[in-house]
Amino acid sequence: MFKNPFSFEGRIRRTEYGLSYLIYLAFYLPSNFYLRNYDDPSGILMIIFVILLIPFIWFNLAQAAKRCHDRGNSGWFQIIPFYGLWMLFGDSDYGPNRYGPNPKGEGNYSSINEIGEKY
Image 1 (cartoon, one colour):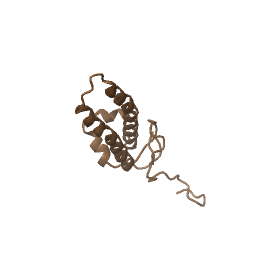
Image 2 (cartoon, rainbow, N blue to C red):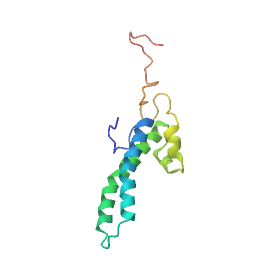
Image 3 (tube, helix red, strand yellow):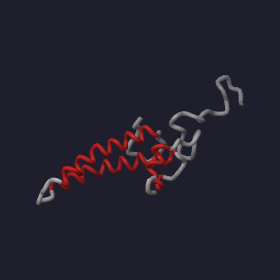
Image 4 (cartoon, rainbow, N blue to C red):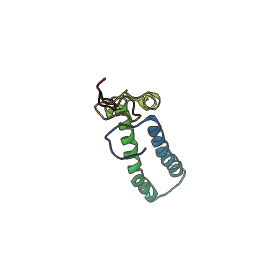
């Protein structure tokens, strides 16, 4: 789990996608709440928050793109409203697709068994 979390290549399972989103929210929500209730006339804290938020946004976009790939779709599908819920609860494509092998291992078998016979 979490192999190349900042890469947009490959496929991930629902669990990894859900945990990725929770990690993003664990940073974003407390920071956002704190900044909304804090008066900083210089804006230094806001600049620091934005700089720290950039890697978390990249992480979230990359993980969502990989989850879209697992469903057999382009990573651009994540901009569709409420598609994140579909990615969270929808099952993946069976077997390999154009984005890589199934992360569950289902259907990734070759057509030759252990003793070399085709089936």
